[in-house]
Image 1 (tube, helix red, strand yellow):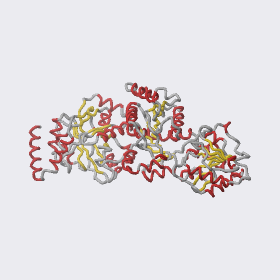
Image 2 (cartoon, helix red, strand yellow; image 1 turned 60 degrees about the vertical axis):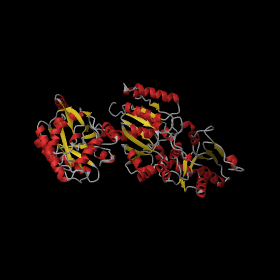
Image 3 (spheres, one colour; image 1 turned 135 degrees about the horizontal axis):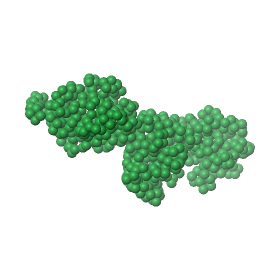
Image 4 (spheres, helix red, strand yellow; image 1 turned 180 degrees about the vertical axis):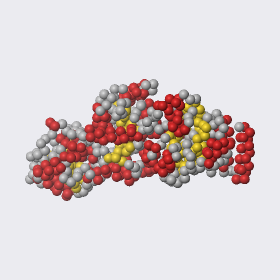
Length: 638
């Protein structure tokens, strides 16, 4: 897209046809983004078979022309893609989300087809359509966490797995400070806070807020205890003052024996068939949120403030941060006496209602979706700015483009590494026999093997490298080094030393949980200094780890490298990159931008068994004899 305009998927885990605060936020944000010229896809589970079939046809049709999925979305209208039926999370019934397999398959097809810059994933907890999107996304991932108490607690059984999964997020956003604090306690990371917007009522629907008969409203989409607390307070309100109350609940039914006498005339029970929440709040003078804490719904409080009603809320962290001093009244959860006292003050003192309403003006003015998207665009733009410039140096690119292609293996070891028994001479002979034009010798915490290989090389280019073990953030490879880098430095210090030598920073086997690797957050912290990422390593036993490296390199546009990570000569060149010949690190980087990864069949079990036999199963005296014999054979062949 043009500068400052992005292709964005907004993903919700909740069925699009079902009313939900997350879906409302997704719709409002998508509309505002599209109005600003961004291309926006809304990805949501759907109970509509027709919508799902239409979405699948569009995804299949876009395989040859991926941009077709985004056609027409930059003119102010987002596009909705339904990906199959899924049951929304329902904490009151303790039901897990049902995710039919075709949902995940459709999402995978979408995210491997659509040319997206960003995937904004709301409530990315598994299992759901949102978590499936996070799994398959090849875009920059933004995660939004709304009111997450139930979801966070339900993930603690598999907390470590969830942490690794959420590690795929490139930016995290909490809707409230209380949500951020909760997430930091269970899943520590850097969370920004972007307060949601609210839908203010139409001007003609609003009253003057100085009603002769104050309207007290409880929106009870929270829990039954909230209704009981409110009704108990109403029974104690003075009847010598004019007031009226409305209880809105999904059922709209009056609880049996709830009210008697004059209270029956003063209190109404309504549901969705009689009135929607927005219309009710437009007429309200006072809005009560009486949650006991199990499932607070702060979005309802924001709607009340936007409508101009005075909030009276239970003292819960997420409510307390919104109802600051002078903007509303608080009471302890379940404290009927205090709630009664607060409502009585508001009924008797119109001036107090006016003062509190004016005190909420700063918050009310922030509750626009335009402000939300302003802040989101800053997050999006910050991530986009971190992508590497893949254009490179056009002069050098033209220079290397005229050169012949060579095969290069960027990751291998000699017997100068403690876990390898391959002599330098054997390595060089094998590299030549395998048709390699250049190799990077990257022994563990040592460059003597690479320097020896460079001195003895005949007809093959040797890059002096070192695979350095950092203090506690995994391993990183320095290429084109001149001096040994000591192990045990921080990741940042190791990278600084590589750069000081004029070398290149190459991250090996990222995301492989069976290797020592920097985690996602550490890698993001040094991303600007990373020159290349190893996207394929044949010694990685779980294919998904390589796939994750491919996705990371692609979304940040980091040049991709590959190597055999050979610890035995038989594995050398099993993975290589085909690239124009080069001279020095600058030309190497330009050549790498045009490289292709070439994989040849190699048995991981076979090469790992050879490594064990050569380094662990053979006694040291025998290893010395084997080494000498292998060197003699290599010299004769060369």
